[in-house]
Length: 268
Ligand SMILES: [Zn+2]
Image (cartoon, rainbow, N blue to C red; front, side, top):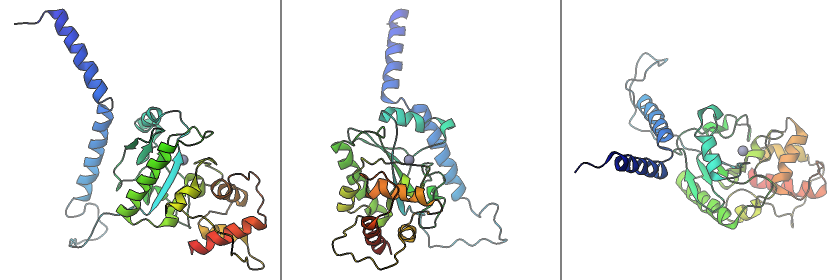
């Protein structure tokens, strides 16, 4: 039996609503798939296209390039939905591999082997173009509020997975502020770096038995930890956000010398 037109229309609207509610990102997922497929096609081309060499002989021994650094961010937005919307809008040109919601939900947005657009102009340990070597994790937080317990637990679990999957060293879990001093201040002073370090992600200091040698250059210490010190005050600010969040000054006193010396020893 043929359904009356009004019933057909109603069913159509219900179907449309249902489709939208299960996959509101259907169109952007299609864009993702298309781009990923194009990259896959390009790297599997044989012989290599546009090569400098005149001859190609494929080796039998290779693997995918792996990320070696994890950069943590706060989103400076009010919800995961807002962040997802930003990362699925082409004109923003920004993305991260993971977004961790206030409720602890982890959203994966980009294959870990692909290059996200989260670090921007940045430097760590003298290395640049950190988007090429890092994974980005955006933690949903407006920048002036504490992080929820569910969220931090989820971040710690995610870091555990990534550390194991890619063999990432403890000292290579850093914040956006660490790699972009003067330009970025995330994650904020509310971020529990000490707790993360106790779980094995990122460094922390123990100054109880630290004897700082006479003439110790604390700024050079920051450089050896990884900071870009070309703008000293900016480097000090990033160090304080991460390791001495209660101190908003840009002074490096004897206590800082001890902390920096302790961190430096662990970095070398
Ligand atoms: Zn950031």
